[in-house]
Image 1: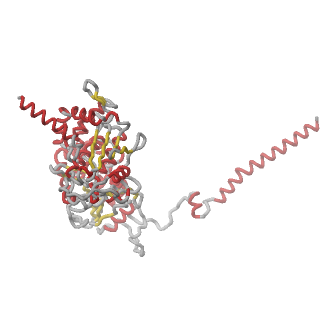
Image 2: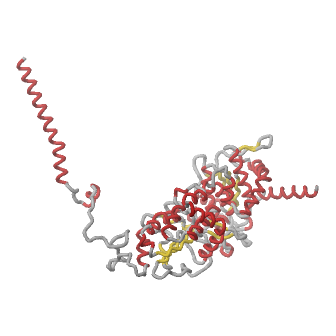
Image 3: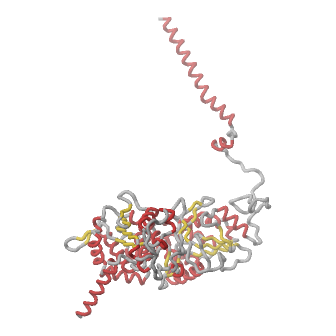
Length: 565
């Protein structure tokens, strides 16, 4: 019994040291040697708004970029604002719920400390509103962890989480940071109590601080701070360890760009303005099994237009495309009849070494892909399916759990079908969708293919008119639903009646009201100019004349009165 107790104590000590003595040093076995790495330390509080934003946005995006991950040592400290009392209890600025959140997070770090992308993704998921309400820990853990992971984290939470936090508080003095999130790059504090730390500031600071071998200097750093001025001799590098879901062959070459490259939009973090005012998505090229470029693996139904769509749940551009041009298109019944719609909700989804799903935005996104896969499986009528997908992808769902979303978008029998599907076959359906996605290269999302030809590109959105024109051009069936003019020599076919379809519009010009602004722009006169001028004369001049006449009469009467006096 004494020997068993000794072994348990030793194991606990190893776990405690493993979490902190080598500060989440997942990077030590990949990329540049530890002594040449840039230290990035982040103190944060669970669920403080600024911390939620920083962890789930700039920090997560930085760590997902292999070039930066290869030169960093990240120390994540979810204990800001925590204090240890003399009796050994711990307190948090926002009370017991915050302390509980820190306990769950430190256990997530302990579980995945050798995979920086994995543990940071889990922390971002726990911090996110989408995973559930603060305090509803069962829902949050279910949305952010697999069944196996929940068992490991729950054991840690029950038995070791307090010890892990106390050790972190003592060694890091996390209760004394002046603001949070508190970010330090090689002893240099970034931001302030009133200024956040955006992604560009993070990257610039890391580029400036890096003095390791030149071969690991991120290419983007040249644009941000210029060529590397101080660097160490080149070193022999072991085969790098890759984050969950990455292609080990792609990661094995230090000088080679990572396949999962991020093409950032100039106007907004994850979106671009498209040609017709619609939004395009995060242009993140996925790791995919090599295949003939952009060749669909499915066959086209005779005459109909095969419309394939690969997308990620809740990515901004995907939401915009589904709820605007796509929804508008299929609400026209004539278009419904000529479309063979094949949605694949699996972009950004892959598998880790154990075969578990790994998604770009974390476990919540994977859950969304499973629910969306069930919607595709259970509802086959094009109009009905797109309406339901659009409901699930609505911006009104921001901050809601998937359980709430499914209750909102499916009622009665439809809800029962979705629940049964999710419980019994959603895993298999998503695996099939991942296989479809891996069969071709998906360079951006939403990735839309019409009869085997991609529509749009990585920097322009797909507007309603562009989508309708492309469908009409691709349609080869017998039903004449798209009225097309003869080719006039212009690029593409010209339509008499965009954005509608069906019979051509009458040849008579449509009556149009010309606004005052339009009249000025085109140099013409407003409608009823003369009548307006006459009305103005009547309304302004005539009362003025009457007023002057009354004044004259009054003056004369006054003079006559004085004479009589």
